[in-house]
Structure formats: structure tokens, C-alpha cells
Length: 226
Image (cartoon, rainbow, N blue to C red; front, side, top):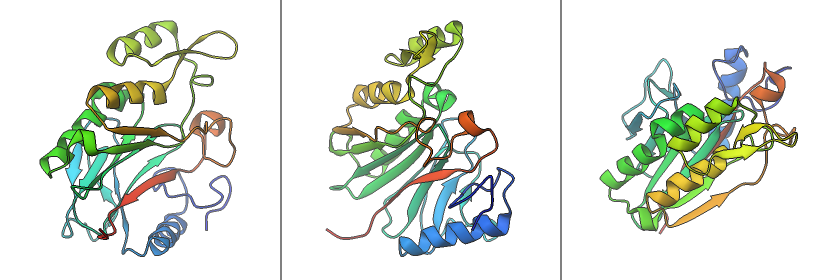
């Protein structure tokens, strides 16, 4: 329902788009998933996590959990989403324990420990890291995420595997690589990466490419099926 420069299924409420169009887009997404709504965190580039149950819905803003960057649930039928336009959407599921999580993982959130905190919250609901599958969705790749050399060095020290080089040979960060390193380090059983760069692939919103743009989502939900 969104008009340019947010054309398509923009799900972000804080990017300048018409809130009515965003609400329609969110309702469309929820309808495709056959659920009442998709819950989103506010996304403040931190490591806060909220456990979502059926009664945690604010009537005036039924999607966004304030002050956190990740959501987890063990309740079937609750869809958890994270909004991105270059940052990583990281979706996690332990099918045996019936626990899922969704984390918004940008540079600052990864360094702050959002993935470790999300897995810890899932463990509190009965999940075991070895039984968790993590999916890292489309995000900016190391070829495109140029940063100052000092920043690259600091991030790589906190998140080994994040250092990269752009096509022109300058310092860069590979956030998916850093996320894989973190997830492997906490014992996640299976790690999958969707190999699409949001800057290179114009099907996706990209803040670094376009500046004024929308947000797409990674979404995970328990269906309740065995």
C-alpha cells in the first residue's frame, strides 16, 4: 500500500511513511500468516529481549515492544518479526522445545550481545542451543559495508570474523560472518545464511543504498503442529 520511496510492503512505522499504509501492510502480512498480528520490537540497537505471551499487546501500538531488539515466545500462533534495511534479521527456532526467537542485529546490537541474550531467553523457555536452527536473512555484505579502519579493528576485536574488505580494497565489516561466529560460539546447532546483499539486490530496502526507504521483515512463528 505504500507509495514511493517506500513502495511495496513497507513495514516500518518510523521511516516517514503514511502510518495508515504501514498498518495496512502489517495487516496484509498478518493475514498471509493467518495470525492476528506480527509483533515487532522497537529496535534501539541494543541487546534487550522481551518474552512474548498472548496477553502482551499494547492496544495503541499492537506490534512494537518498547526498548528491545529481540523477541522470543513459546506460544503457538504468535508471529515475531524484526524490521531491517541492511541490518541482520536473525530468526531462531528450537522445534523440539517449541521455542522461537527473532533478533534485530545491526553492528551495535551484535557487539552489545543481542544474539547471546536472545538465545539465553530461549533457554529460559526450555530451548537448548544445540537444538536451535538460526537463519540469518538478507543484509549488507562485507563487500559493501565500508567503515573506517579503526572501527573495523574495534568491531573485529569484539566479534571475530567481522573484518572484511570492499571491492576497492578498503576496510569493511562482514556482519553476517560476525553473527555466524557468535552463534557458533554459543553452540547453535545449525546456522543458515540467506546469501543476498541488501545493497546489491534491489528487491530489498537498503538504507545505505537509498537513504530514505522502507523496512522489510524477517518473521518466525510456531504453528503448534508437531
